Image 1 (cartoon, rainbow, N blue to C red):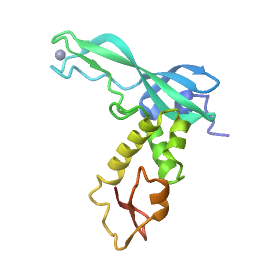
Image 2: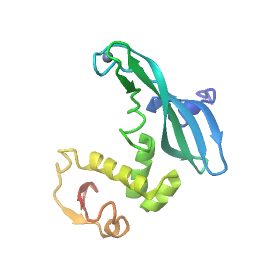
Image 3: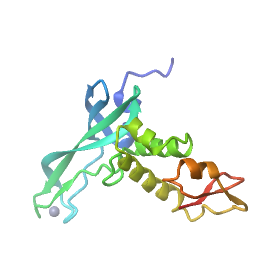
Length: 192
Ligand SMILES: [Zn+2]
């Protein structure tokens, strides 16, 4: 393989795209934990715009795409900074890795939505694959679906014929109780 590179957990788990780098790994029989740190630059003080000094570190767990058929948890060590001028404290922004207050990494959110919409798995099965609770998976999927499917003002452009997909209504009742699709473009027009 001419393009082979040295092994790299960051690129294999696609964490480099999320602005994270692995510090250590803990492989358990039922799951894996990757302890990570952000690689993005710290932001200045949100109060006065001055530079911050390291204050302490908080831990935030994110369910990630499962590797090796086991749930994978990103245990992100998030630095907190303190402003010497106004003494304000703030956390390092890890929005490239996960939505605000989200419990799933962005890749895990994408996998969850595809599992429901394309693979037609149940939310319970998707939650189990990710190693999270039903409510956690459901909240993340609904938030992503709302953001991706219904905030695009051009999503109805070119739609001429729509119909209700009964299969989706029956099996994904909690996500798409009633889903209307463009019959020719297979785009989701509306759901409720
Ligand atoms: Zn400040």
